[in-house]
Length: 153
Image 1 (cartoon, rainbow, N blue to C red):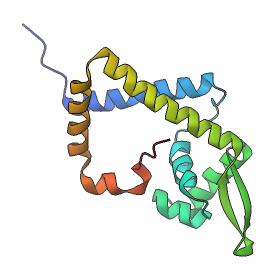
Image 2 (image 1 turned 90 degrees about the vertical axis):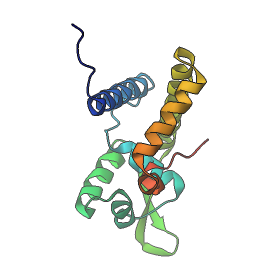
Image 3 (image 1 turned 180 degrees about the vertical axis):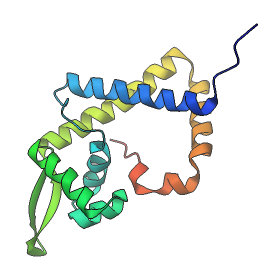
């Protein structure tokens, strides 16, 4: 008697957890072990353009208080810098620091390597089919959300 196949939703969740585990391990090996689980969303947002805390909160759909706490932690750990807004010296804009840019570059390398290794372990057609299925599940509306945009560098 064979076991029933695992629920697809659980498999997708487990695959995501494994991806995140490998990403965090790779970042730690490169000196970014103190990067929190939400940092990637901030990295991607600030890589597009500097913004203030309110804009970042709106972009990430979190409270301004939550964004302020996250930014404070990231500033303390050296990933983000506050600088005067050239249009209004009293206001501050958030920028990725050198460390933040290096961490983002390391994460992007991991993403590329992960997909390359997945393709090598399977085949390009299977990975392309997986991408199509995940894209269909994610929906166009969610994929259009700037938080999930994948800038290619």
